[in-house]
Length: 332
Image (cartoon, rainbow, N blue to C red; front, side, top):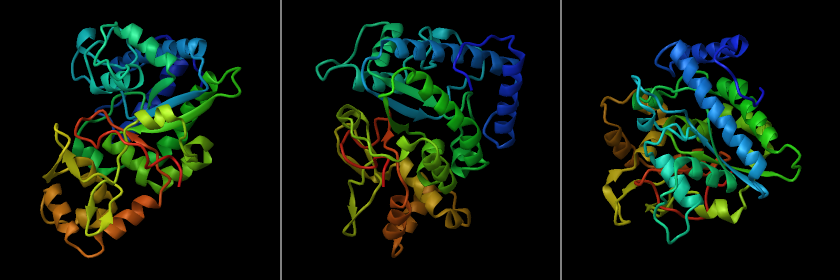
């Protein structure tokens, strides 16, 4: 894969992209097979991404690039004005999103600043100067349905091997051009489908471990460690610390012990997938409460999670566990 601008008229690239979209459609990840609108949106988004990479490549003077792996660009059911769209790298798509706002606040603003009046174009430049890069597992929108993500279906490991790893290598090699000392550190921009596959998917982990060696090395950069938000096992149940957050965090910083964190619920359904598929009810929360009453629940859950090399997980969601240093580096 080459990192370069493309045109709508590029037939070879169009055929390659069409195969990607149709493959994802067969796996049940997209709303439709490839259309002309999907192709044109991809070309525009890709070119903005390349512009950002070019600026970062020319201007970034640090030694460590901070890579956050996201899921997919936003999906729009109908034509929407640019100011009401929110693709991360398009300076004219200015609708506020937690992903952009939270990243900018954590990596660019100082502790005394709550917000900036800079244009989005200037904010993108500031993020690039800090070495922050958000990349997606899919180069086109995927289905946003929780039900679809809960199934964790399709040949996801094949997608990682055939599309994502070559894409990641191309991007990192492009940024490291004539910079042999460049280091890369990784985290997951938390989305249920992608993050859970990366965390718990055995086949995916094998592909990652054979790919970029940095994906299996601990993160040491104090800036990244200090500013990336981690899922942390901060609750103790029955005398054991759980390696995932359990409860929803409220605005005052306390935890609502009556409301489980949806990410926690999702992971439980994956670890106990057979039980979940055979569960008589349709409430995930009720299923989780039932499982938590079982002897050995925490032991099995912790063993499954701790058996993986885990990337840190960043979340822009205010209900996630607050910023803390320490767990789930991308190492054993």
